Image (cartoon, rainbow, N blue to C red):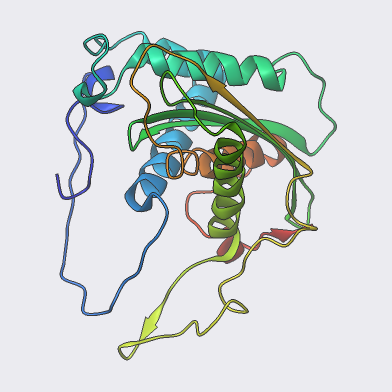
Length: 258
């Protein structure tokens, strides 16, 4: 429970042997808000590892995820409080694969698609990133597709689009260069020159947003749209370059924006 993952959440009910351990210690440094904080870590680690398993098994990453989702018992119909609903997640995975042309397009050398999915804050999101990376580890995000299932009604469509696009940009900033380090009880990073934000020239030219309308009570959008973009980009980097990213930020492994 201290890790923020309930027993009904993916991937616990979908694989035979699963253990989650946490080691939590008191922090003597003040902390502030972060968008979908624990969900970012879970999505990056779990979805990156699932991608590794898919490649090792010689399976398509989308098909591999859909097969995993078929292994769990569905959540009770119409109950957003009942935990992870595999059918809702399959819906967004299939939709984002279709919208991105997954498996149907020929990619240039050094360019690939990657996928990530995550359920958090009652929202189901799957995202595909088209990423180019060169031998110098210069990264360019060409496009991101986002599909979400947040229930039966979106009252403000333009606001919903803005929230998901902003979540992607926020996630890309975190992914590339944001971290906080503490030395002698003091935070090292004093401002954004040490805690980089994505600039307009580095942002993807297009972020395609689509929401599935389902017969569930409406839920939030602002946080659950962020976590899947982290593994989507990391998995695309692997497909494009053969190099697996296992920790963030990417800058620590020598990556930078093209």
